[in-house]
Length: 332
Image (cartoon, rainbow, N blue to C red):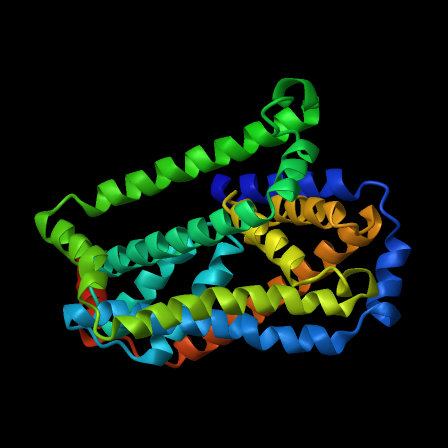
């Protein structure tokens, strides 16, 4: 229960702090008449393609171990993982391995190892294009650090009591998440077979066939994520002229903000992206309105895909060995 309530409460607290005194009539006006919905609809396919590329890459990582899960199962497992993380942050990675085990009979620990490998690749890519972004937009990042109270020169003086509290809670969530993941990995390593399966999953990326395709899938994931975010800028007059580079900076900062385990990054993502938009000349109210609408609609897309995955999996027969294990558990 704490895993559900604590992240949700923190997200609500940050959002309340950001939107206290917000002119909600402007939100309704923007949604009803000012927003160009065609751009939002155009962005949705890229939100879907990002998850589709992830499913394709995951299937490719599993192939060197002699595992050939159905693409539909991998795709629905990814859809379901994003959806479940809205309820319990960071639970999706474990649950999608459970889906693969139930419906394809693939070793759970091998699945976890392959997911860990994927995350290492993703974090490496984020680190690379973040470094490139910082180097090309250094003045903006210096201003961003100053605006958020993180500048090295004025760290202690610039932080308000609220800033200290938000930062402390964010760090606490990250530490707790790390401890939980460590304990899960410790649980997985209780037997030699599970350790071998886990390591096999992690190292499978070294043996992937057609490495160029693996790279293409990886690039496709992040290009899709970016376009899913950037095309939403054209929904409003006040963000349409911000520019692709400014949107990229906001995207990179948002990637780090979602590391705080709240539902789909709610709260920290709003705060970080809004701050970047303000630095690029978007008004405070307009920036707050943009992040609220975009995050809400993109989260609704995750919900729709998750519900579709649940419906599809309900009509998918489980793997034979998974049925046997379930029967054995019921008879014990």
